[in-house]
Image (tube, rainbow, N blue to C red):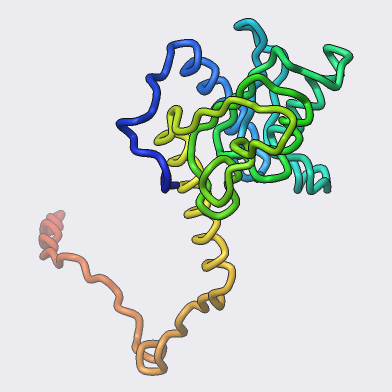
Length: 208
């Protein structure tokens, strides 16, 4: 994962609270990895408290919208009994896609913080920046690159393993080599022991 748009020196400093929340999101990403999903996790905070968590589940739930952000968003909205969450902040290990970015803005999130940048589908600056569109009627603050290295490393290792597994499945099974006829016809070698000379029997005495 790379950061194509922001100079690392220009990033705002990461607060201890933000780092803590992102580490909670990383824990959720590990849950996704355990069930074979792409390891992305999310946590929703309000006033420093965890409101909801989520991790990628589109494959296991047969739901293409079950990204980590939306799983957490649904839990939070149900818990708070409101489809607007203006006091909430979302922490996610990967830059949100366009679907998730728009859902978060529709929910009126105060802030979105993400870890690794996504140069293929990221909608917070990598491919497009939906959070920076002045035409939209709500502006959500966004900060990227928080714990970007561990977030990105988790994804890189996951996809490296998946490619290795796919390559192994494509390779034909290896058959055991049969012994050559010459080797099979060779007589079995029997180990020989050490020979020892037997002592002669003592002479039998003659009785008169």
